[in-house]
Structures are given as C-alpha cells and as structure tokens.
Length: 337
Image (cartoon, rainbow, N blue to C red; front, side, top):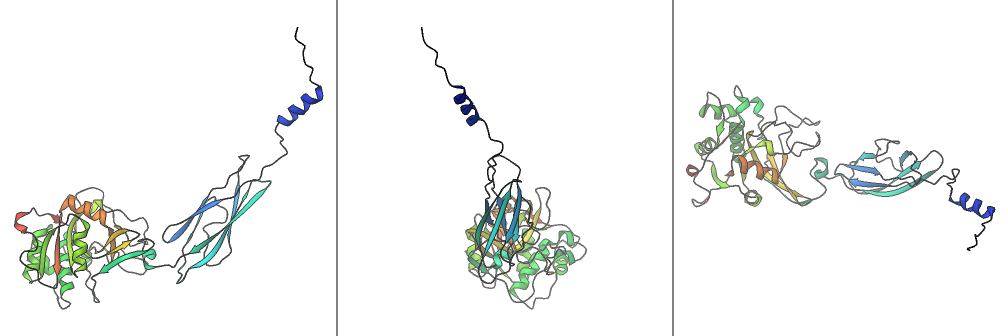
C-alpha cells in the first residue's frame, strides 16, 4: 500500500499566492516611435506598447523651434520640413502614459536641406538633370485660345514648340487652328507635323518605345511633342507638388498633346519635364500655372504613349539628316484634345 504524502497547508498557500496575479503591480509602458522622411515632411509613427495592455495616452515634444508638430497628443504625428539651407539636428520626445506610470523616449533627427526636388515633390536627391527651357515666355494655356479651346491642345503644343525654336514667332494658337480644321475638332499627329513643316521647323518622328530615346534627344538639345492617353498618368498626391497630373481623367481614351522639354533623375527614378497646355487657369500659391514645368513619371509616359500613339515628334533648332526618323505616311495617326 502506497503512503500518501502530506503537504503542509502553509506550502500550498505559498504556491497559490505565488501563481496568482498581483493586481497591485503595474508594469511600466514602453515608449517608442519611428520616423520616415517623406520628401517635404517627416512622419512620426508610434510604436509604444504596454505589458498590461492598458490604454495609453501620449505627449510629444521637440527641443527646437525649427519645426512645428502637427499635434502634441495624437497617437501618430508629423511635421513639415523647414526651408533649411544647411542640415540641422533636432530631438523629438515621446512620453507614453498608462494612467499610473509613464515612459519617455527621445530620438535625434537630422533635418536635410530643403532642396528644389523636395519643394516640388520629386524626391530626395537629383542624380541627373537636363532642361532645354529658354529664358523667354513660350508657354500657352489652351483655355485662352479661342472658340475651340477645349480641343486646342494640339495647336497650342505646336505653337509652343515653334516659339521655342524662334522667340520672334508671333503666330497664336488661333492662327494654327485657322490653318487646319478651322471648324473645330481634334488635331491629329500628322496635323502637327504639317504645321511644323509649314514654317520650316526642323522635325522628325521617332518610335517612342523606351525612355532612353527621348532622353537622348533631350541631351542633344531637342524637345518632343507627344500624343498620349492621360488616363495612365498618375494623379497628384499633393496639390502643392509639381509631380503627376493635376486634373481628373475618368476613363481611357483621353488623348492629349504635351511637350517634353527636359528630365530629372531623382532617387533613381526618371521624371519628364513637360509643358502641359491643359492648365485651364489652375495655379499654385505663387500664381504659377500648373501646366508649366510639370513632371510626369517616365513609366506613366511610356504606358500612355504605347496605348495611344507610340511615337514622338522631335523638334530641333538644327537640321536632321534624311535618314533620321520614320516615314509618317507609313504609320497610323491619332488625335488629342
């Protein structure tokens, strides 16, 4: 017969007491956050935790008056990048409180110089850039081009291109419209070429199958008129940025003429610098029209041209050899409005 082992009552009480949760003990919360450089602002993402899963309240602060936090008590936070000409260090502090105890963490952040690429929303650092702009006004907003303004992106773009080649050119978009389809309607890509030829403007049409073909033309001092479906151009993320289209296109089939006159490579990405005649009076806070020096992503441009008209009309101040370009009589043409 086995003997039963008698456990003292005091031992049992001690075991039970040790295993029970001591409700009087409060575990300290752990304050933490991460920060992310978002071109023209910094995002502060709260990562604080509480071992007891108690609800937390937060207090944010900064040791510098260079920036202004969006809030002092929200769970997550942010601040706009100040217009610095040289980098500066600040300290952000976050306190997490569970009602009984609190914990504080501080992190040092180096604020970068507020470069042009950050101001306009392109990105952090420009690696390469080329612009064939000229030092006189040659932009046209098609809104101001007469009776057929709604379909005058073609006449506006080709008039801009000729003005780019010759500052003294004094013909208007209305003049271009009166020479071709004066009754109204869309201009086609061969109408663009015809009008350039009417004024003996050096031009050629090339396949626009990849980014490099137009980048090379820009590097050679030329500009390009393209006809694309604007539906495939990304819509702007911020109204203040100069990146992506600034107007809505609800469906495919949004054929449109624009001018490519430069490019920037930023953070490894290529953006084409364009004149888009479809400003329609839309302006930035500095009253600059939004179609001036707009930047469209190269991948968007390639997709939008392949879908609509996979060519580019290159305009130059210098002559081309007869072997350059393609015979436009052998290709299908498309329209823009």
